[in-house]
Image 1 (cartoon, helix red, strand yellow):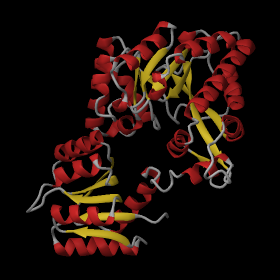
Image 2 (tube, rainbow, N blue to C red; image 1 turned 135 degrees about the vertical axis):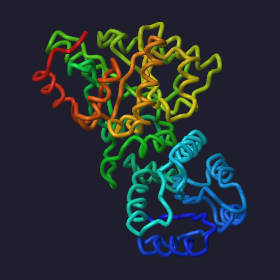
Image 3 (cartoon, rainbow, N blue to C red; image 1 turned 30 degrees about the vertical axis):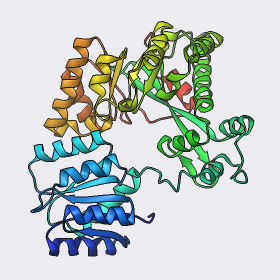
Image 4 (cartoon, one colour; image 1 turned 90 degrees about the vertical axis):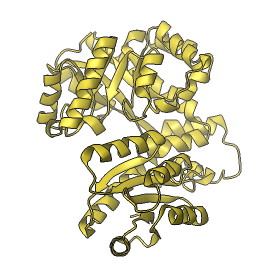
Length: 409
């Protein structure tokens, strides 16, 4: 377990001490404790940001909600754990507010917390933490690229592109309709770090951005995806719709759509079969440059998807303002919805709204037959998740396609 820095905001002295001891027992010794919001502010100001903030919602003195917003807006914490026995609707409201402000909300621990709950929370946090500023150093980026001796030198395009060719890879996860017929696949990027093994996008994309290689990596992914589409068309005579994540920042490039159109023509892939999925849509601007970029992509025939619907906090606004054709409901809402009326209501509402707007829906994170059946009961939507199929290499996908039902056109 990596070394963690934790803030505890709890105004009951005994429970504060108990939490501190339970963290120590789990190997976490860098702990800031505060019995009030003001003390918490002072600790953060003097000792810097924390990885995890464990916050009691109901304090005799001070506004815990205000502190949560401050930590999010000023980057003073990465993960928030609520400490409260408040009603479910209150907890969900606070969690939603914190997510919209930018915090990664792990969940809620009832009071008094147990050592077991603390251990489980720490294990889960290891999977949620974003790279720290230290991890996003130039040296770390060079290590990931396999060029660790370039710590003070600009990274030339040739070296960066060679690293992408060597270490980047793609896997593909099928998307089906409710009858199980294949509707397409989503391309999922991975990176084989020379020293740390396989990295997920949240781990390596910030480093590629730091190294100035985000555009080169995106074009690498698009070429690999379209090459696969062309290969499937040659082998089967059928089209393979595919979804690809792209950073919204590329929309600022005036010739992005034109270059993409040329790439589609080069591989003879119809633009209608390419869905460009934008994540972090709350950061997507609605100024003329970005809107123009999106419209250019739609005009050449590509589809556009909101990849983090309901997570970014302003996704509904973006759906209304920008020319999206699809929304993806993330696993945070879909996973476990069969046994959670509130999740089911969120998914049902999103599907109903999308239907009225003429926007298609993909429900992701389908892991169990119960969740699949719960989505089916709500109406038409496409399904994606490990129950349908796990992410697979291009070679395995081609074998899977040969064994599966015909690809929907």
